[in-house]
Length: 284
Image (tube, rainbow, N blue to C red; front, side, top):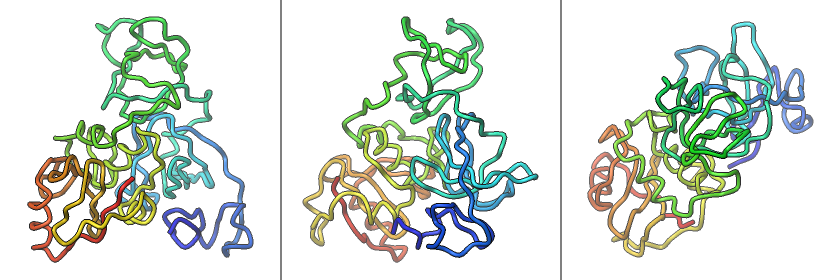
């Protein structure tokens, strides 16, 4: 379900909708978007334009967003360009794009220094998946268009991707569980899968039900859940894990309140005790 039937992916409200949806949805008015870029390391995309609204997902530095409305209260109604998610971002987290991103942060998190010296107090940090524009990369620190400097070894050129999503996911082990999170400061099950897939150049929607419908092909693992291998995705209703090998998974989960590695059989038994069975196994 990736079309207008899913409100998470459709920029349409009764009072306002994207211009490209004219004739396909009902709305009082239709508008063309303004393209903006995220200028905070990570910023919450919320379900409603209030600070205590549920966290739907996070937008990362450099990510492009289509802005359909800017409100007097300091919120923007947007659609993320990376995965199509619709929600509300703080207007202070957005600015006009200052150039096309040239690199992506490939480390779990990197520091931004005010000058070409790692002894200087950092200005900020950036998470894996953040997109930056490098002006100069002749030494160990790359100079960004924003004026800061980051370790060049923590960056990957745009279009250069990792090859093993499971290896990316495993790097997050120990990260706190955060519903809607997608960084090393906090991440949820589908956020972990999305970050791992995107690091490998694989398009991936945000929520586990979207991923189950759109990622890879089904695997007939049998009732004993055999015939699974590294990188396969195991789904329950509202949850997803990634196989590390034929018997172990890595997943962000509320039982451990962290990203953890555990035997697949152990997780299946524990989750089954709550009344939820495996719904699908998908192979990329």
